Length: 60
Image (cartoon, rainbow, N blue to C red; front, top):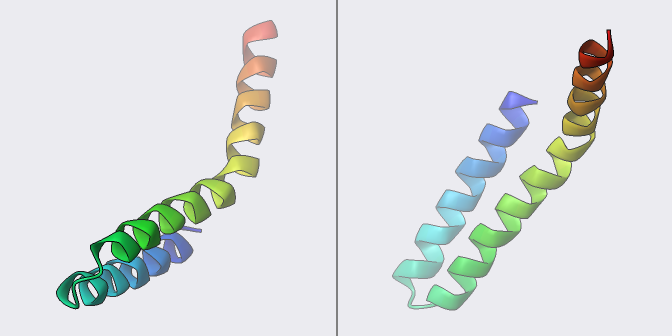
């Protein structure tokens, strides 16, 4: 999971730099936003499991 997130981050950073250097800042920002959303969507199931586990621990 960590390597997937790192790969997405590196890919987004490269695309962002290329688009920024070519004068397409709007597309660069959209690329960054889509990368963040992709990572959040990957993490949502794991966060839900974490919240369920914490609820079970707090109930005793």
